[in-house]
Length: 73
Image 1 (tube, rainbow, N blue to C red):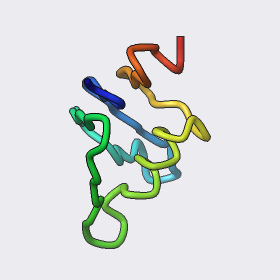
Image 2 (cartoon, one colour):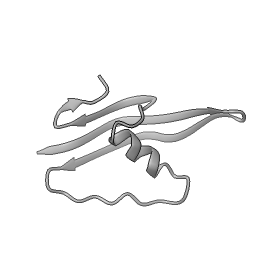
Image 3 (tube, helix red, strand yellow):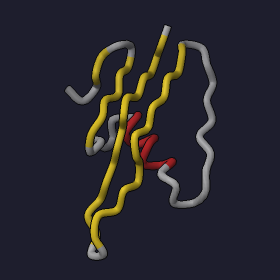
């Protein structure tokens, strides 16, 4: 059974230099009982992704399902 499902997640920020696309078309499924590690270079969007998964921030677009419930609808 899927515990978390992420569909076409994007997150952008507006900066003085223009639009900054941090997450682009992220897709992720985590099944019940699975352990997952998020790794990447500094500035790759790891914290942004985790903030969205924890409902601390909203995505620009896309969906996050927790136990088949869209947490942002």
